[in-house]
Length: 270
Ligand code: ADP
Ligand code: MG
Image (cartoon, rainbow, N blue to C red; front, side):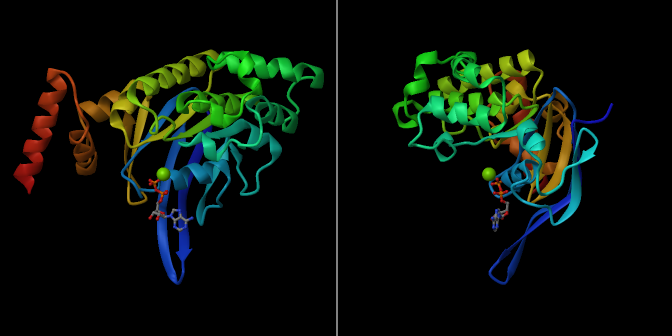
């Protein structure tokens, strides 16, 4: 079956003054319709760069991207902008503080001409309810919401235009553990209900275990390893992946044993 998203030999170079920074180096992977692919790696490994390339916010320096077998040009059509949406770590940076939440959601519906005009305000209320917020929140400003509620609004906006692929860049990293668990639960329920595909970027491997079908591990702009979540945790192939897993706070005897084995190996090799 044609993958939903295909990334072929994609590189991205930035110029910083006279210096060149290679943020991504010949990265290739596919994302299947309906899956949740986690992208993990330390800070600076290129995770947000890949998100920006998928969103069309950056053009690749080399390689190509395709969506449903169709080349994704650097300048995106409205259709592709609608199909591929972003949820960022800090929703305050993407929600206009002067606009009510309802107005922000309504704008997304207007831009993409979703539904009849006269229906759109009702649709805003339905979207809020779909992400577990009261429809009455439409009149509130983003500043009047908690971090978790704001992230729910950002998710509602990403879903407003009937997107197919949602890139989530550290969507729960700014939230405390309990709120994080609830938002992850919501994301999982939405994925099933709407048949969405997620690219879930995080540095938090305990989140990965809860939500991802597969994991792609990045280090310094390179894709080191990509495999099923179970396989990555049970049998990490790359030393970098082993180090990452060794650094996760673990629970349960098997996981502790795995961590100890990894640490032993690391120490043995040092
Ligand atoms: P991550 O999200 O994994 O922390 P990034 O994708 O943000 O990593 O960054 C990868 C590398 O690219 C880093 O070395 C970063 O400094 C560099 N980089 C990212 N964006 C830019 C930019 N707009 N201009 C210059 N360098 C950048
Ligand atoms: Mg980042």
